[in-house]
Length: 329
Picture (cartoon, rainbow, N blue to C red):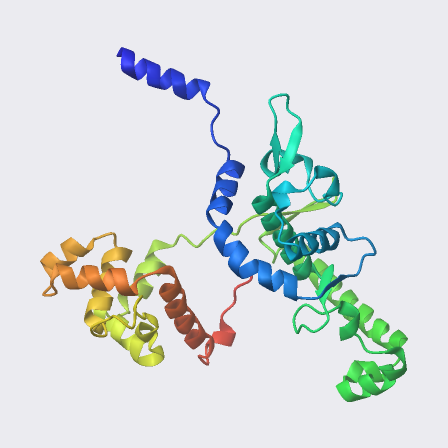
């Protein structure tokens, strides 16, 4: 090994590699300006409350509000002012600055602010923190019916099983469950459930994947009755039924000179699906390479592919034969 290469490898072995957490906080540092400009005014303007009495994240938010109101920085405040239980041990190295002896000396304000906002978002989603004048993040108790209005609310729902006694409902459910268990046991003893095996010693059921039908003659006989059809004709037929190619919108619709024609879209989709490439497709078709490449860059991305797939799936679900499909065993 040459000396220069040996030194480079030795230096890499001596240096501490970056962890995934390091890279995440580096990405946060790059978005500090956007967080300060967009998230901070929103967080300071909303009126948060919590179902728990002493929420550390609300205390951290109130602390930051007082500091920002006096036009000060979080990094210049003493560490004993930081609300308790808001800096976990695993993140102390990322949220605090340390001296040469390893003692914390100051707070990394931008990172701490982002950390608090992220915890607020998580607790809003689970309902631990709520906003009274919100639609999606209100207190869960606000969605419940008052006890004195229970009879009126149940009457408005008009649910049949609510009009009978709970004992009768439970008896009917137990009877249905007993019927299902008896039917299951009968089919298991007759050997109809090929995917289940019962061990009488251990008294356990073992599930295994059913074996596929490997009858090649049956497969060939079925497909021999199906007429051959060009893939482009299949594309056109499906597009006539559900217009899935219209979901392939351009990335920059304002600056797009023209809407991509369906032939170019079909050619690009086939080229990518078959790992053929736009260049090979241009050589074997009458569509120039630059047209295929521009169509690929403008129209083929994850969002448009999902939208087109949703149109096809929704159309299949509306077909009369769809209820007869069986996705279970």
